Amino acid sequence: MTTASTTRRPSRARTTSGGGARRHVDVLVIGSGFAGLGAAIRLAREGIDDYLVVERGSEVGGTWRDNTYPGAACDVPSHLYSYSFELNPNWSRSFSPQPEIQAYLKKVAAKYRVAPKHLFETEVTSARWDTATNQWLVDTTNGNFSSRVLVPAVGALCEPALPAIKGIEKFRGEMFHSARWDHDADLRGKRVAIIGTGASAIQIGPAIAGDVAHLDVYQRTAPWVMPRRDRGYSKVESLAYKRVPYLQRFAREAIYWGREFFALGFAFEPKILRIAEKAAKSNINKAISDPELRAKVTPDFQIGCKRILISNDWYPMLAKDHVDLVTDGIAEIRENAIVTADGTVREVDAIVVATGFHVTDSPTYEKIIGKDGRTLAAVWEDEGQQAYKGAAVHGFPNMLFVVGPNTGLGHTSMVFMIESHLNYLASALTTVAQRGIATFEVREDAQREYNEGLQRRMQKTIWQTGGCASWYLDKHGNNTTLWPSFTFVFRQLTRRFDLAAYHVTEVATPISELEEGIPA
Image (tube, rainbow, N blue to C red; front, side, top):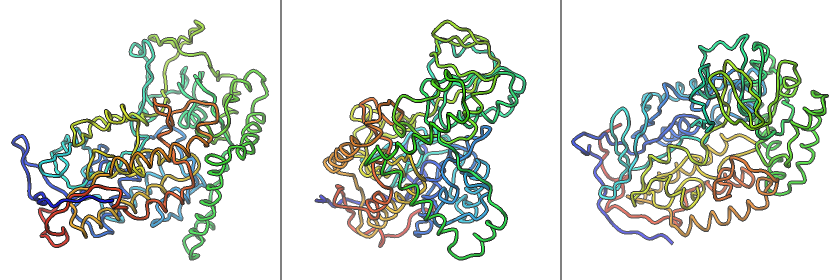
């Protein structure tokens, strides 16, 4: 049941904090990857003009702008990995390479004319809820702002995680994270080490192996790698997608429902995934004949427990004479070498760190401060990362994530989940405007009951029963990353803003009847 009180609506005029003027906007979005860009377009299409997108990069794109390493590509089919309102008939392949995805996002931003609503090369340093004015006070490296609604859309794969290895700061060769690829570094003819065997590493390795003198791959846990069913699209196919009505949408729907079948194995009946495991083992056996190497690359957990990777050239690369797979742990890094736990010293000229991202402990959460003065990071450190429907967090009024906790996927396109959350956001803003709501905050009991039910369902999934530890889990042992059901269930769950789950305060006059303030 909703509780409400009547308060004065905070002024939309410029406010002053610490002697400096703040520019006020109705909605402030943080980040401009698929989520933030999608939010900007949806706000514009809903007729909401008073918004701003703050982006630390120089252009839209998010992870597809930042990850420019050799071989970077999507592991979701191209026709599904795009906005439903802006299909692209010009994909060159069934799995798009990074440059095409980034070009697509830039083209979409230009078409919908949302770039003027962006503030690029701007880092958010603090976003604090002000109870006196019922608004968010957002400080950035490019000015200070206030906003009625805050929309974090930073994504899970945006903050590179560097390994805590003894002596790593002493290395004198070239060293960089996969998400911050140094294009000035020439790896040709050099001894190179890749630390990690995740989604980025299995693309980087085959892309550089032919140029380097020697490649050491440091593996902590062997991943399951399925064949990549990739092919180029012919000009005839692309032309057909342009000219034949609904053909591309039909192809997209077919891919969607095909991928959705995997959710049965992930979330409901893990035994179904044995078929996929056989295909993955066949992928190993076709490329690797050495029994010792086969044993090293074969995981000891059920497929699906960790992220399933796809590649046709990862195993063939590992079988090359000048490539070594190292499974002993790294003890230290020296000026020109990596030393493993067994005492072996391997000299290297360059190190590629492909150790993933801060998923459950993003530094962004340290910057968002709720009504009780605690940061989002502190709240989640104590209670575990959780939100109501992946969007709202108790103690943080007027804030809605786009793809927050438990909205990640292991089988299909995140763009589907993003658009589901955009439906929820649009419905929330419409409800707020129509009912004259000053603040909305998810009730603590609603958030708790939602997450208790979610974690109960999670216990039956492959991520909890598959026998592995993964970045899906937080320090409390809960899977706070993935959605434990079909994506169409989440779409239904977020189709409209459920006001009854929130505590609200109301203004005396509905917002829709008040005069507009200073434009963005």
